Image 1 (cartoon, rainbow, N blue to C red):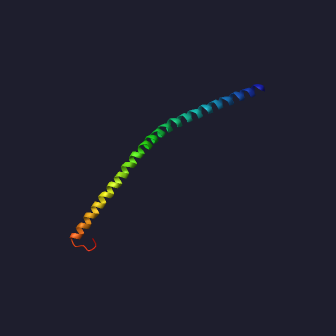
Image 2 (tube, rainbow, N blue to C red):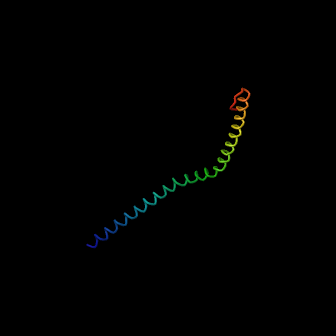
Image 3 (tube, rainbow, N blue to C red):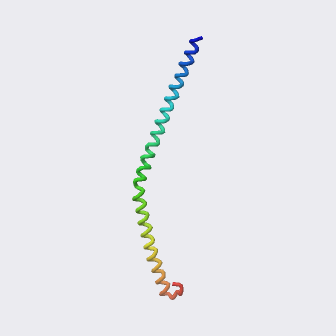
Length: 85
């Protein structure tokens, strides 16, 4: 009767070893997939201030051009005798 108990305990230990091995493999796969994503996110984050500065400059340039265009339109309307100019 004691041999059955020892056999059951040996089988149980094998299950734990297999379970731990599968768990370690899964963790390694997840790490292998997440690390490149984090590196890409860091490089995007490093470029973000440059992108923001360029967008702010584009907004300022667009506003300057819009003011120039509006002024030209107002002068054009005034020359044509538009009372609302």
